[in-house]
Length: 106
Image 1 (cartoon, rainbow, N blue to C red):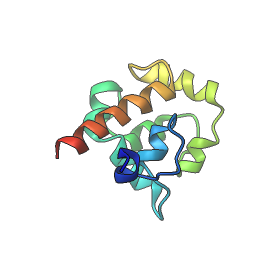
Image 2 (tube, one colour):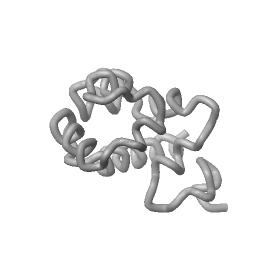
Image 3 (cartoon, one colour):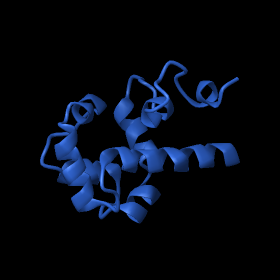
């Protein structure tokens, strides 16, 4: 069994770790908050939580769809200004690696 099948959606593209680890569910916002755990946000960003990251952004981010609908270049600029990452993809990839490590060590 592939690791993707054990930890998330098996139909998610391999290049999208957040889709693999944060499957579509009735309350995806809670899942994003768990994926970008407070410890991760405090270590790599200027925010205490993913909710604070969203609230401080220039957009109304209330759902995963809101986040997915943002222009990638604008989101990258926000991430670059407020985190240790230069892009959204790098930020979520780091979170994915951290999540995978934590799940494998359980």
